[in-house]
Picture (tube, rainbow over the protein chains, first blue to last red):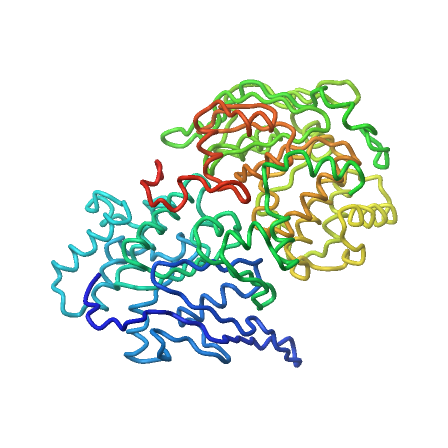
Length: 282
Length: 299
């Protein structure tokens, strides 16, 4: 989008053997929780990897490590095959490339500031050379791109004046503002109404195609994981227990945890079956 | 009043479906704010004995308000402006729910119709243990019950919902989300009600845990024969478990029918749209998927 002059030949975001331990203290005893155990994957431009699992499986911890909100206990995150920064100006550059969309659009936007502020601030931070007018134009352009148009009517509103779906679009626009190449989306639609979920996911997919974004889509919803990603990683208790092309993982699961996850997902095709099972003493 | 330990009202559930247990006709509910909000507009539903009726719709469509209306739980500024709600008791007596007042209303609630509230995982009192909260139900509604009876009934209820009775001494924060939800269901079952209204009972839970709870509800229904109004926006789940489904939009029930019929041949365009909002897990890939095409009518 803007000033990506020196893009290396192979642009990837790679997680290599990520491990995260948390120390839990209760009274005097301390025990270690292994939240993430040896997770590796590579995000490529234009491709989506879905990370699925129950809550507590460690998938959000992976997201937070990728967004540098959490420091891995061991393992590396490589951007364009080079170790990524952990602080300072180099970290700011990393954040320019890797942005996150959070789950809850009701708490991820500052209620005090108008929508414009949420977009202009990242634009200004990552493009110090731009004039105020250019920044304003960029912000409007971003709003139009996430289909909040006309931008002028949305830019000056505050978050509480927008619906959940509109707020999540603002959050997506905000993530794109620095000119990111990789988006970490942590349950981006689970707080939204069902009838607008697909709209937001489709928007994300469209932007992904236009910008050749690499997306890490974190979800517990297997159906959208199947349709919106190229590869699925199934996470259970901090470990990746199964990975593969999304169609294959859903239609031909190998690991028993994947099977139980699929079994638990609601499927209208099975209507009445649970009742019959229960009736026959299941 | 039913005896507490009375045998489940119906043995063969399947045979009793057909006879209505709760009828609501033309219920309208308004929030008297400025300007007034007509949250429910002329909704009519019939719940039959032992059936699961799914009530589906998006947030803000009035489904929770309607449920509160059926149970007379509306608080100002909400006001039922019209319609009637009749409860057909197992004894053969019809109760006009709208006209209930004072002591009669107190005996009606929870005895006949109980409710599992939205986000009820968090509606347990954090500073009381499970025992105290379950005993509370009996002390309020069955004042003649002795302490030992209360204790044994509470333990029995926990066993019924698949929680170890030793958990009676636990505080809510010591239980997992799924267990808290099971305790809430035990509480709703305490007085052997004929109707249970469940408002998004599993939304905050993980899929695997959710499955366990749903199975438990279905199992208990077979055993105890209560009818369920199951409120959620998760249409695939409703289709899978309910006998009949009512779809709500902007305060009105726009379509009602057997779940199979709603799934296979939905009539109202909104029902079709709602169904198409859920990509199929195992079926064919739909065209809307990842086309990046204009997101249909999103707010």
